[in-house]
Amino acid sequence: MGRREPDENKPQRSDSVGDIIHEVGDDIATVVALPGEITYRTVERFLSFLGGISILFWRAISLIARGAVDLRDTVAQMSIIGVSSVPIVVVTVAFSGMVLAFYSAMTLGPMGLAGTLVGGGVCRSIVQEIGPVLSAVVVAARAGSAMASEIGSMKVTEQIDAMRSLAVDPVEYLVVPRLLASVAMLPVVTVLADVIGTAGGYFVATHNGISAGQFLSSIRMWVDMDVVVRGLIKTVVFGAMIAIVGCYEGLRAKGGATGVGRATTRAVVISIILIYVANYFLAILLFGHGSVLD
Image (cartoon, rainbow, N blue to C red; front, side, top):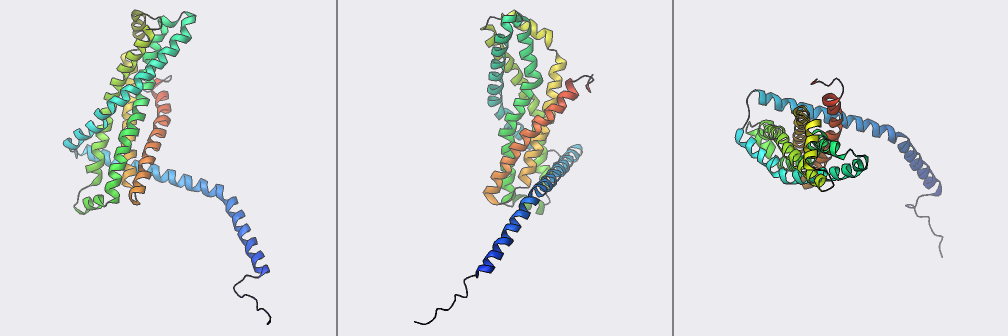
């Protein structure tokens, strides 16, 4: 038998070891550099997002100031964003008010304070915090996702490019009606939620040893119209954020149906995060000592 020739395609041992060393070195370098890379990308994306929504917002505001508003589209969006969201918002806030009244009655009843505090505490908590925030979260999940998916579908199917080719401004046609409708309807939805949530708390409280007169007198003692108005001011800010974020994510969608799905998810998640972050600062500005309205 002849001598077997070495396989030229088979890597030699020294080459294999060298490749492994280089690969391990590259992996170590990647791991070491990863935190800095993640931080840089995170900051870059955040600043890009902040700049994008700011530009879109001011473009929409400038168009509104010039009177470039389609009333028919705006009214249609008011129905989609506001009227269609009423049932789920009302149910959410109503049961939140009922749970709050139940816990308040159970906690304050043994102390003898339920009659004087439950009604006012429940109503004030709803109009000042629960109503505006939960209404905004529900509208963001329902209407904000619809904005992102609808505009995103138009983006990936090149309908928005067709608008631009026909000299139609997508911001005027798509963003302005949704922004106005969201800002106008979220306070209305929140008022209904406040009323139903307080009514739910009243129902539970009266079935836990608190008389109707005590509940209502406590509301008159602790809640006035100023508190209600300040709570509704929050919803104006929330409504603008929901519309701008939903439209922005839709306008930057790409990659077909998968991209539209990602844009919709981002719109809902970012809107809800911004609602809670903004709520903290609005609470300080509107209800803290030395608030801007005092």
